[in-house]
Length: 115
Length: 111
Image (cartoon, each protein chain N blue to C red):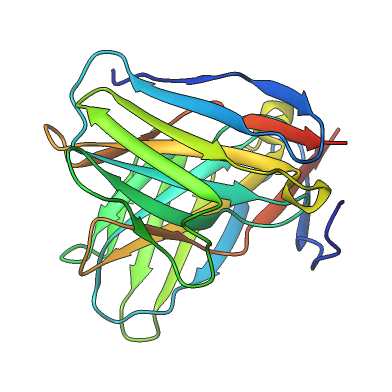
């Protein structure tokens, strides 16, 4: 089946620094990937849609200059949290759309803690 | 810091009983629905899906029902087991590729 690898699984960074999270589709090509954020005891909130070879589409209220998304290949999308603050601490999850079967596969998530 | 948000509704069932988890979706144009299971600290795991041209679909121990008239989706788990304990989310897709998640329900299975 379709597998999505997300790395790192957890990261601790200092306020003001930037953190990059990678999302890879291992056995299929994904022209579209998605980035979600999840706070404790809440649902997944869509942040942006990552499109291979073009700019990402951000949901309302998500700062595109703070959450930089790059989808340079058909198997890799990255999310960079720039100038991280403690309120950015959250669980970030990526998803890749597998058009072969019209399905969505999720990564295992990244726990970001900003101190 | 940690945000203060709504706590997830909880369904408690005894091992061996059937569980029914409900979801109200928002967009009448949604054409595809998926149920996910999420364990603590992990990403969502696909359980079962259904398209808008169907009203019922069955898998192994799970059944999804779709009522488009009232925009309601349910997940039935037969013979619930301790390993079923997790948070369950419904997700809908409308007009675009995006999946939008519902609020979620925590399922607790006790012996």
